[in-house]
Image 1 (cartoon, rainbow, N blue to C red):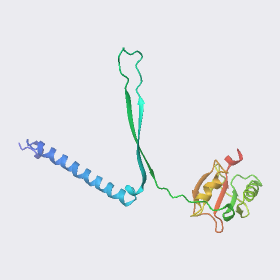
Image 2 (cartoon, helix red, strand yellow):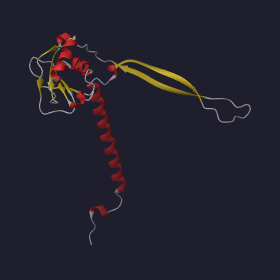
Image 3 (cartoon, rainbow, N blue to C red):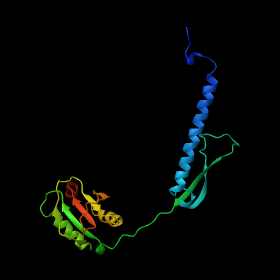
Image 4 (cartoon, rainbow, N blue to C red):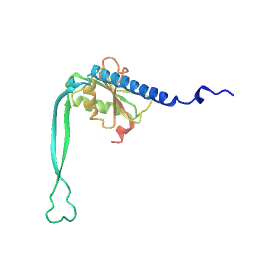
Length: 185
């Protein structure tokens, strides 16, 4: 009777060493790739603006009863704080933003009413229109470069989903689709 190659004894320590070395090598490669990748995407020390350490002394809770002559103690907690640089983009004035309102509810005159409200707020508008299919939730869609203005406008539509879209018509910067949740407000 012949024995298979795994039936032979004495190879366990060798196989164990090969497995452990393989795991360490793979771990080192993954760590190196993550480290190099984070430094290429700006996740390194360049992103840190300020760093400080705050030490807070918090008295330890006293036991329900203390023996005479016992000392109180304090615990010290160290919390590192850091901040990163963020680019702040100012929104254009409302008079420089062209908005179109589309009625995605089917209520006659709703888009015209909202358009009039936006005109009073200083927005440039184009004539309102209807939209199909009907929507339950309002949407504020913007063309590339008009994100800050869209989020500012979306404050008037608290239920609205906000997003960039290539479907915003030419000559329009922000497209507002009025859904049924707007009527419920």
